[in-house]
Length: 151
Image 1 (cartoon, rainbow, N blue to C red):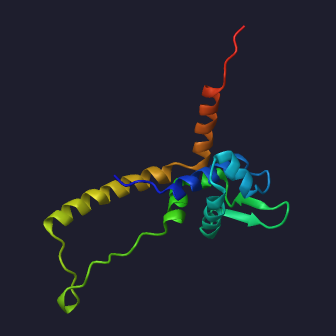
Image 2 (tube, rainbow, N blue to C red; image 1 turned 60 degrees about the horizontal axis):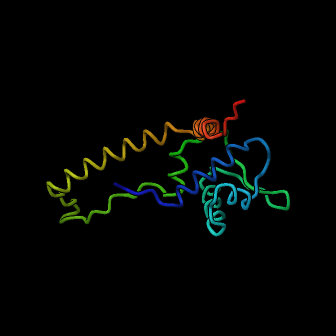
Protein backbone atom coordinates (compact mmCIF):
# COMPACT_ATOMS: atom_id res chain seq x y z
CA UNK A 1 0.00 0.00 0.00
CA UNK A 2 1.52 3.36 -0.96
CA UNK A 3 2.33 5.72 1.89
CA UNK A 4 1.48 9.39 1.82
CA UNK A 5 4.61 11.55 1.97
CA UNK A 6 4.70 13.81 5.03
CA UNK A 7 4.99 16.88 2.79
CA UNK A 8 1.53 16.05 1.36
CA UNK A 9 0.08 15.76 4.86
CA UNK A 10 1.67 19.08 5.85
CA UNK A 11 0.29 20.69 2.68
CA UNK A 12 -3.24 19.50 3.44
CA UNK A 13 -3.07 20.89 7.00
CA UNK A 14 -1.56 24.18 5.82
CA UNK A 15 -4.29 24.54 3.18
CA UNK A 16 -6.94 23.65 5.79
CA UNK A 17 -5.56 26.33 8.10
CA UNK A 18 -5.85 28.88 5.28
CA UNK A 19 -9.35 27.63 4.44
CA UNK A 20 -10.47 28.13 8.04
CA UNK A 21 -9.36 31.77 7.72
CA UNK A 22 -10.53 32.31 4.13
CA UNK A 23 -11.49 35.94 3.50
CA UNK A 24 -9.72 37.25 6.61
CA UNK A 25 -6.56 38.33 4.77
CA UNK A 26 -3.06 36.92 4.63
CA UNK A 27 -1.88 34.42 7.23
CA UNK A 28 1.76 34.25 8.24
CA UNK A 29 3.63 31.00 7.71
CA UNK A 30 4.85 30.81 11.31
CA UNK A 31 1.25 31.06 12.58
CA UNK A 32 0.20 28.18 10.33
CA UNK A 33 3.21 26.13 11.45
CA UNK A 34 2.40 26.75 15.12
CA UNK A 35 -1.32 25.94 14.87
CA UNK A 36 -0.85 22.87 12.66
CA UNK A 37 2.33 21.63 14.37
CA UNK A 38 4.28 21.70 11.12
CA UNK A 39 8.03 22.06 11.64
CA UNK A 40 9.08 25.62 10.76
CA UNK A 41 11.77 24.34 8.39
CA UNK A 42 9.08 22.66 6.26
CA UNK A 43 6.29 25.24 6.25
CA UNK A 44 7.96 27.63 3.80
CA UNK A 45 8.78 24.78 1.41
CA UNK A 46 5.20 23.52 1.54
CA UNK A 47 3.69 26.98 1.06
CA UNK A 48 6.10 27.75 -1.77
CA UNK A 49 5.07 24.54 -3.56
CA UNK A 50 1.38 25.35 -3.02
CA UNK A 51 1.96 28.84 -4.43
CA UNK A 52 3.83 27.46 -7.44
CA UNK A 53 0.94 25.01 -7.99
CA UNK A 54 -1.67 27.77 -7.96
CA UNK A 55 -3.34 26.73 -4.71
CA UNK A 56 -2.27 29.77 -2.65
CA UNK A 57 -1.14 33.35 -3.19
CA UNK A 58 1.31 35.29 -1.08
CA UNK A 59 1.73 38.91 -0.12
CA UNK A 60 5.10 40.26 1.01
CA UNK A 61 5.73 42.64 3.83
CA UNK A 62 5.09 42.89 7.56
CA UNK A 63 1.32 42.44 7.12
CA UNK A 64 1.82 39.81 4.41
CA UNK A 65 1.38 36.09 4.39
CA UNK A 66 -0.47 33.41 2.48
CA UNK A 67 -4.08 32.94 1.45
CA UNK A 68 -6.05 30.52 -0.67
CA UNK A 69 -6.33 31.56 -4.30
CA UNK A 70 -9.84 30.06 -4.62
CA UNK A 71 -12.73 29.50 -2.20
CA UNK A 72 -12.37 26.35 -0.05
CA UNK A 73 -15.25 24.71 -1.92
CA UNK A 74 -13.23 24.95 -5.15
CA UNK A 75 -10.01 23.37 -3.83
CA UNK A 76 -9.91 19.57 -3.87
CA UNK A 77 -7.41 17.38 -2.12
CA UNK A 78 -6.47 16.09 -5.58
CA UNK A 79 -5.19 19.58 -6.47
CA UNK A 80 -3.08 19.68 -3.31
CA UNK A 81 -1.70 16.16 -3.76
CA UNK A 82 -0.92 16.83 -7.44
CA UNK A 83 0.86 20.04 -6.51
CA UNK A 84 3.01 18.36 -3.90
CA UNK A 85 3.74 15.18 -5.87
CA UNK A 86 4.09 16.68 -9.32
CA UNK A 87 2.24 15.40 -12.34
CA UNK A 88 2.12 11.78 -13.46
CA UNK A 89 5.35 10.56 -14.94
CA UNK A 90 5.42 9.30 -18.52
CA UNK A 91 5.94 5.61 -19.32
CA UNK A 92 9.68 4.98 -19.17
CA UNK A 93 9.77 1.39 -20.39
CA UNK A 94 12.76 0.80 -22.66
CA UNK A 95 12.04 0.76 -26.39
CA UNK A 96 12.50 -2.55 -28.22
CA UNK A 97 13.88 -3.14 -31.67
CA UNK A 98 12.57 -1.05 -34.56
CA UNK A 99 11.18 1.55 -32.13
CA UNK A 100 8.55 -0.84 -30.71
CA UNK A 101 7.92 -1.01 -27.00
CA UNK A 102 8.77 -4.24 -25.22
CA UNK A 103 5.71 -6.16 -24.08
CA UNK A 104 5.39 -6.37 -20.31
CA UNK A 105 5.37 -9.81 -18.72
CA UNK A 106 2.14 -11.44 -17.62
CA UNK A 107 2.95 -10.65 -13.98
CA UNK A 108 3.74 -7.00 -14.77
CA UNK A 109 0.47 -6.66 -16.69
CA UNK A 110 -1.52 -8.16 -13.82
CA UNK A 111 0.04 -5.97 -11.13
CA UNK A 112 -0.09 -2.90 -13.36
CA UNK A 113 -3.81 -3.41 -13.86
CA UNK A 114 -4.43 -3.66 -10.11
CA UNK A 115 -2.35 -0.56 -9.29
CA UNK A 116 -4.13 1.30 -12.08
CA UNK A 117 -7.46 0.57 -10.41
CA UNK A 118 -6.11 1.63 -7.01
CA UNK A 119 -4.83 4.88 -8.50
CA UNK A 120 -8.21 5.52 -10.19
CA UNK A 121 -10.09 4.98 -6.92
CA UNK A 122 -7.64 7.24 -5.08
CA UNK A 123 -8.15 10.00 -7.68
CA UNK A 124 -11.93 9.75 -7.35
CA UNK A 125 -11.80 10.09 -3.55
CA UNK A 126 -9.28 12.95 -3.57
CA UNK A 127 -11.24 14.82 -6.24
CA UNK A 128 -14.48 14.50 -4.25
CA UNK A 129 -13.02 15.90 -1.01
CA UNK A 130 -12.71 19.70 -0.88
CA UNK A 131 -11.26 21.97 1.75
CA UNK A 132 -14.84 23.05 2.50
CA UNK A 133 -15.81 19.46 3.34
CA UNK A 134 -12.71 19.22 5.57
CA UNK A 135 -13.78 22.43 7.35
CA UNK A 136 -17.18 20.87 8.04
CA UNK A 137 -15.59 17.65 9.35
CA UNK A 138 -13.16 19.70 11.45
CA UNK A 139 -16.04 21.67 13.01
CA UNK A 140 -17.93 18.47 13.83
CA UNK A 141 -14.85 16.94 15.46
CA UNK A 142 -14.26 20.13 17.46
CA UNK A 143 -17.82 20.02 18.78
CA UNK A 144 -17.50 16.35 19.70
CA UNK A 145 -14.30 16.98 21.62
CA UNK A 146 -15.52 20.10 23.43
CA UNK A 147 -16.07 19.44 27.13
CA UNK A 148 -19.71 19.26 28.19
CA UNK A 149 -20.65 20.81 31.53
CA UNK A 150 -23.90 19.67 33.08
CA UNK A 151 -25.39 21.29 36.13
